[in-house]
Amino acid sequence: MSSPELSRVLGPEEALFTELARRTCGGTLLVSFYKVLIPLSVEQLKTAFSLIHKIYPLLQARVESTEQLRWYCDVPFEDIPIEIKELSTPINIEYEYTRRGKTGLNVEACTYTLSFYLNSLGKVGYISMVSNHAALDGRSAGIIFYILDLYFLDQGRFRLDRQLLYNPVETYFDSSKHFSNKQKSGIKENLFKWPVEEAAFVTEREGHILYRKFPMEELSHVATIGRKHKVRPSALFCAIAIQASNILPNHREWIKILLPMDVRDLCGTGIELSVIGTFSAVTTLEVTPDIDIENTWELAKHLQTELDRQAASGEYCKFNFHKNYDLGSIIEWVEKYETNNPYFLEGLCVSNLGNLESLGVHMNFFEPIIGTSLQTHGAHPISLSTYSTEKSSVFVFSYCEPLTKRNNALNFAEKYINTLKNLI
View 1 (cartoon, one colour):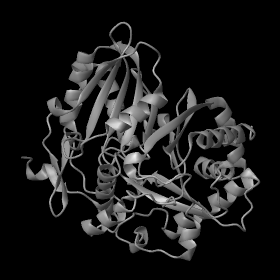
View 2 (cartoon, one colour):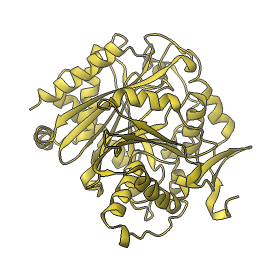
View 3 (cartoon, one colour):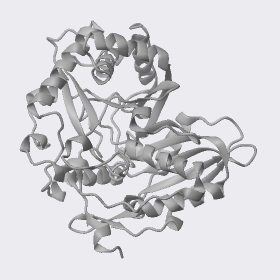
View 4 (cartoon, one colour):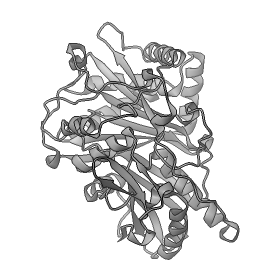
């Protein structure tokens, strides 16, 4: 059994992600892929992962369910499921994302699983990690591979102190304005719920992605234009998502965007980027029929103004449940996502990780390919994750079949990228 300092009750966001993963066939599980740039063997990687596994408590975590959900950080690396898969053809990331998502993760046994993809020389060419989003968000997954990179750069001098098991993110916020009430419902809220294309119970759904690259020099030019308009990238990416959604057959003029963000810099304490955990909150943007969405920059400026207003008023980040939550209310809310709902319960989702170089995640041995959540919870018509590196900008469009059909997701992605190109 874990020592007391390596065990605690899950925070509300952690509990929410965990229950969604358990009850919606892996919904919210983070599926990440990294390319191995310098040849490494399976044994070399196992050795490196085993060292890092001992450093971070949440890598050793499992969830135990009683009246509450509790982390116990006592899982040895030997108990982490590892798949070794030989590649006879180039890897198909979109296919592997769905396959890995179907394999899933038993959150009561461990926090993550690994797949090593072998090339024709028997070396690992790609690594896939499926993780409980309650323990590892996209930035945390990136930090793990950054630490792995440091290890391989200088194995003889590699040293890193054991990390703490940090408190849930909600405990760092006191004001009630940071906590939304998920029990609220009304006529206006229902207007933002778009119909699904085909209703399905959770066991009938599949999570899929569309992976697109965009030249970094072209995106930098767009960002320069954005600065002239006083528009930051997140507002622009949301504006383009709103415009692209016009092509969906279930589009409504009442549009809601969920914008997840890292909030550790708002916690009022020294939570560094090297910390592993989930430190995110959600900002919501709403567009009603009276708002003109035809002009990309005008729409982006409107969204930026709203984001600035939220920041000035301290409403910039919202958590789904209060820190003194009742697990029963979270379970009751999650159960809505298991049924064959005729509507998406949430709006579009846009997650902008920004430039990974600015996070200190420059790597020599690994290159991030994707890191995005499985959408089998069926909350969003389309979810977009985007990030940039020195070489390129990546846009990953994720969706849930049959709630959103593949052809319509393809049309959305094509319109999104074309709209971005037209801004150059």
